[in-house]
Amino acid sequence: MITLSHPTGNQFVRALLAALHDTDTLDGFFTTIATASGRRHYELPREKIRTRPFRETLRLASQRLGVEVLTAHETGWASADAVYRDLDRAVARWISAHPGPGGVYCYEDGALETFRAAKRTGKSAFYELPIAYWETSRQLLIEEAGRLPEWEPTLFATRDSEEKFQRKSEELALADLVVCPSQFVRDSLPAAVRHKCVVAEFGSPVARVPQRRNGPRLRILFAGTLSQRKGLADLFAAMKLLNRSDVELVVMGSPTAPMDFYRAQYAGFIYEPTRSHDGVLELMATCDVLALPSIVEGRALVQQEAMSCGLPLIVTANAGGGDLIEEGKTGFLVPIRCPAAIAEKIAWFADHRNLLPMMQDAAQKKAGEYTWAAYAEKILEAIRR
Image (cartoon, rainbow, N blue to C red):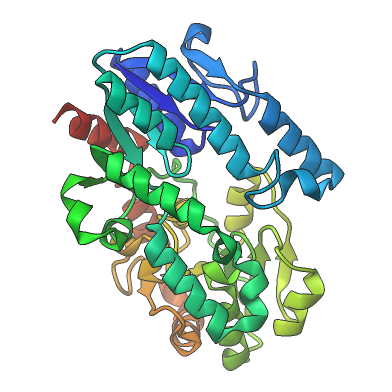
């Protein structure tokens, strides 16, 4: 039996929860908040869910009210790091009180105390790493801060403490199995631990009937946090290099700097604020291509979401979806930190718009090869082994 822990219950968490419950191997799910409906609702028997709501409730309220001292990075009593650690300690106490066979399944930054308790009580420790390992991520982002210092304030991970990095290292060392969402994440790990890794790719949404757009401009979509971790500076630079009136850039996501900063970098983009998942898919249906020249990710789900809407991709391998790209069919891979290559591929799409319908179909077909059921089954099979 498996005890699973995650503070917010992302889509990949829900997929694994459903598989564990359906196979009668879920002992319990620890999270912060569980509601009767809405985004924090889980399709599980109530007795399977154990909550730890106080810090997360205060974190959400502090964000709405702008009380930054409570949510300050790492140090705030209701910061995201504090929420993760509080839940981790609660799960560890429960595990310590229930020794014996079984396993615990946790995620990066919320596993250390739980794994220590698991080792003391004879349980296996299963670890999911949703983004590239911290040593790789830190090195790439430090390089970005030096290359584009004006974008450094958008790179929050450059401010992580040595204590946090040490926690990550110990979590990895204690894990009996490490689940990675992409080959890029697996390759980011120290060579000595790759033998205990399995790659389980995320699933795609159900494909939507693509809109066959024939507008006067090619619409390029960027979707994600407005940060250089996702390569936004390089995309802006590419648009300036391109300088074509028949191409427009739509930027959707959460700003990490004042909007004036982004306009100073490239004034010509159309900004779209964050919205519900269905709203994101609706926006995607009005665009032609997704561009995500990320510096470091795990496996950016937005890639498969866009493909399910019929958008081919311009992405880096560091976005974690290199396996999604069939060159010239489902999109193109570009190197990181290369605005010229991004501009070249955007220009190719603008000059070959007659090929978009074929590429839309190919993108949807490729996205359909990845399901949440297959993601969960790869993990369950690795756990059984």
